[in-house]
Amino acid sequence: MSPTPKSTLQTLLKSSTGTKVQACLLESLGTASDSQIEALVELLAPLSAQAGVKMHCVRCHLTYTENKNHSSACKNKHDDEGNTEYETGNDEGITTLNCCGTSFDSEDSPDTEFCFTAPHTTAEDDVLYYESGNEDEDGVNTNVIRCAVNGCAKKRKVAKKVGNKGGSASKKQKAV
Image 1: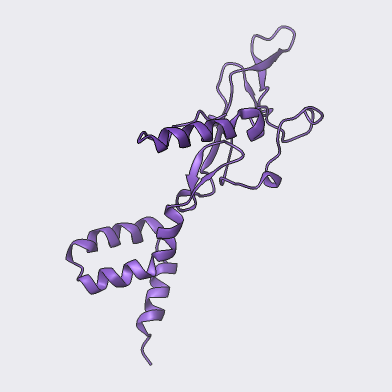
Image 2: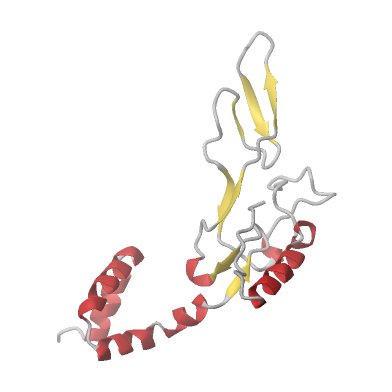
């Protein structure tokens, strides 16, 4: 018994990267018939709906859509503040960044420019915020603050007003 077109497609999609599938679809659009395009639009309708829903990440305070969210979409850069400890008689020290506790040789830079990478989230329960009372806990990052402290509600109101006047409502927010 030969495989059905549905099972063949499922196998192909499961064994291909998203980038390969996307490139193939984009390349095929030029020669696809109207009925093929209509079928594809219908199959991808949930993605289309998600693309129009803009959300606010309560960790990095950027606007995102679920279509562009992935395991390292939410990034928080190190700040430059830290403490360097030197051993007596040694010119090289160990620098520990205040933001996330990352340590490295003082002559070098951190292994990565980011304190962390994670998926964007709208759930405050998923985020460990830097607040009075938890400054000394492991995993707390001085750059991760609540929206109320960051002023996100005010920024979004201003962006909506600008958008209603015919301007651009998509202001790029500085990552905290």
